Image (cartoon, rainbow, N blue to C red; front, top):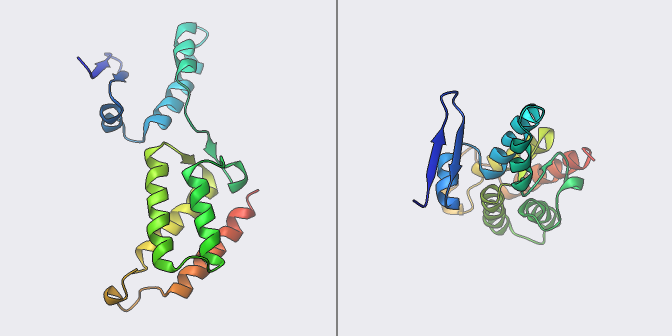
Length: 165
């Protein structure tokens, strides 16, 4: 067997196998599952120290970041922030920014990078506003935001996220 799910009568499960299998079994990513298990292990540490030992052998790859200052410089989230700054400084066109930012976001999610609190909300707002910006001018409709409105929104998001530091 390459993959397995073991469940207890109390509703706890252990998922093991390939990265693709484990990811498909989880509702929120591998790192989030590891964080949840660590919290669970801490509650049980007094009664069963081996649970804590197992948890410590499988720590999350990334910590949850509450501000841009906390973001690991080699992360995809750092890349998203850099792309936002480049776009605001007009070093990137809107279509370049949209494509690159969405790619970095997707990779951040795949890698289990986690944001927390207001910082997560601000970065999600960028994602949502990108949905209102058609990169292809032929697809533009009434109510869609312009490139300049997108730039203003990204600039405002950067300003607000810096205030979290």
